[in-house]
Image (cartoon, rainbow, N blue to C red; front, side, top):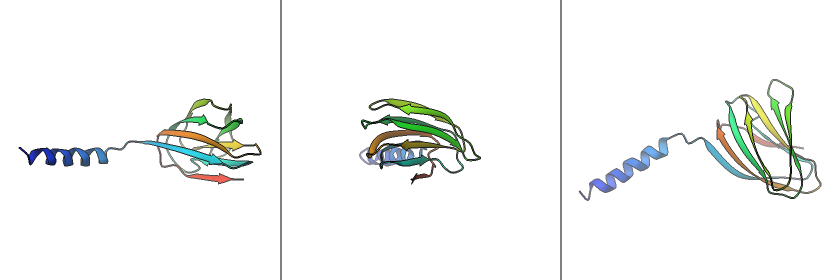
Length: 119
């Protein structure tokens, strides 16, 4: 019986590590007058909860990879927004201020997203 418990623990641990938990948590910093782009690649749908933890307003846009932009959001300081992002669409978070900002991101769905900055 003593041998059975460690075996069951190892089996459960291995099974849990194989499950596809599709979520990503991140604290992201954007320099003054810079832009953070999430998902500028081919991908499926994802859902993101963005929390502005700084004291200035941020602007968020959705950019389909085949062109255009839509769904502008002005994110006030200390507020959150949940955004449903279609497949093959990037989320562009713009810091048009003269100070660095921070935000918390929680992504669910397709997490195989490119991440980068563009000034």
